[in-house]
Length: 144
Image (tube, rainbow, N blue to C red; front, side, top):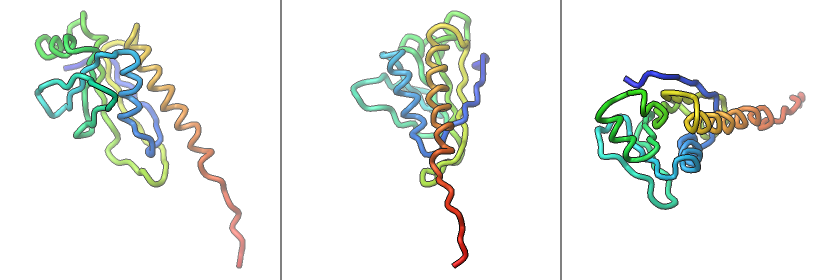
């Protein structure tokens, strides 16, 4: 059990959601580790410029390999609550027509470095939603 805080973040369906999350995480946690939720291991440490590609809708991002191993061994203990994000991507996405959807972020606490990571992710997603209304220019329909 993870516990903590569940955040539902509105986001545009046509942006690369997991890429945005990994780019933000990489700035704050340069030694982050990735794990698909349907895998029991091994953890995938971040290496090089390439971002991970989740195999499903749900994945974990840990601050570093030590944090990942601690979560695996101890679960959600107070000492490590701020070292992991659990991400749930939207079930359906339209890449052709941008519409509002949402991504869920689950974290142990919204303070310190984890709070900064989550706030930056939320801000990026919020900006994408605010620009959604400017994507479409209404054209008047005229009779032929």
